Amino acid sequence: MNQTARQAAVSAAKRCDIAIVGAGIVGLAHALAAARRGHKVTVFERDSQPLGASVRNFGLGLVLGQTQGEMRELAQASREIWLDVLLKAGCWHKAQGSVTVARNPVEQAVLDEFQALRGDSYGTRLISPAEVGAFGVPFDNVTGALYSGDEIAFESRVALPRLVAWLAEVHGVEFVFGTQVNAIELPNVTTSRGIWQAEQAIICAGHDFQTLFPDAYAEPPLQRCALQMLRVANPGITLGPALMTGMSTLRYGSFAGLESLAALRRQLDATDPVWLAEGIHLIVQQVGESGELLIGDSHRYGESVGPFNAEAIDQRLLELAESLLGRRLTVLERWQGVYASGPGGYLVRQAAPGVTAVAITCGIGMSVSFGLAERVLGATLA
Image (cartoon, rainbow, N blue to C red; front, top):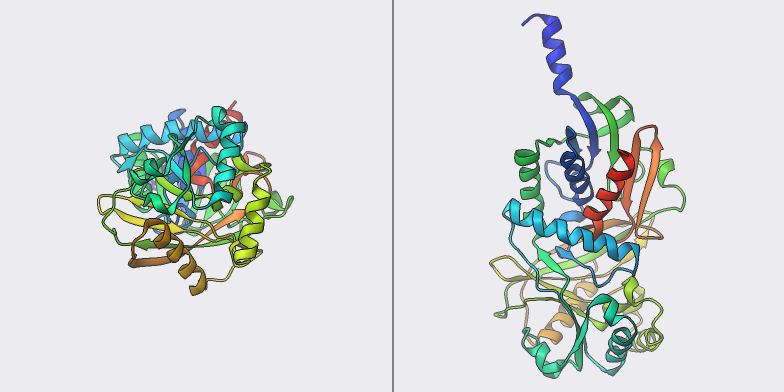
């Protein structure tokens, strides 16, 4: 092969229709949406594998928590895609919904009001303490619960690498790991491993909104949110649905505006102001064949967030879970997650000609990314 032919081959190897920055769930969702439309896709990831917020969460596709309207529609669309992808990629998952338990009359009042006003829209139903007990929770610890059948569960740290492999094998998506994208001026995508050429680019860089086109994220200004989570050994129970508590209703848009939330805030503030100050609530998710439990979480916001977990917060989360489940729990792992935070559920901006910046601006990337990617690609390639 002469030098001209060799240069042409190298150039072709570094050319794609759509370049995607970031191999978290937002980037992978956009890669799938683009590949299904017949485009040659290259995904650039600075780490050797997905290590950000997308593998540091519950692995919960939450429909119930999304605000009625657009966000819930995105979650429902994402749910259908998740079920298809998880099956085809051979990933463990379950579609057994969620149970939001009330531990006292104040929390029960929130669930009662939600069901009366919005239950028909969300397809939820109230269940008795005895029915909660069938899900592995001692029924004497709760006054009742709200059941939703829409939630799906998977193990993020396992599912994302398998999704990467499936996208590469089945859809021909090229992944370039261990590579930092330093600049994009189409057709050139300048990286730490050379220059690629692309017709379009989509930036899905998670909470890194300062490296590429920071002006696209400037208004409204974004923050970072750090959360603490735990993984504990299987305590000898089987949980089908994901478990949440009445405290979780303070964090999700579907419950916003309920009059009963004011009493819940007052109760938590009187009990211990740390609950509200640190954004602590409780989700318990059982994952994989081992039956280990993922427990969390807390929420701390700032322009920058430190890497140090507070043991007092971990202890509160652990004690909440032990109290709810009526069992002692053995911690296997502790970690911190970080994600972008801002008003609204997501941000989509035209950062430059042919370059789109996409960010999930709250902790619902696993719940809405597939639906959002379909919308973004539909608009971008129209």
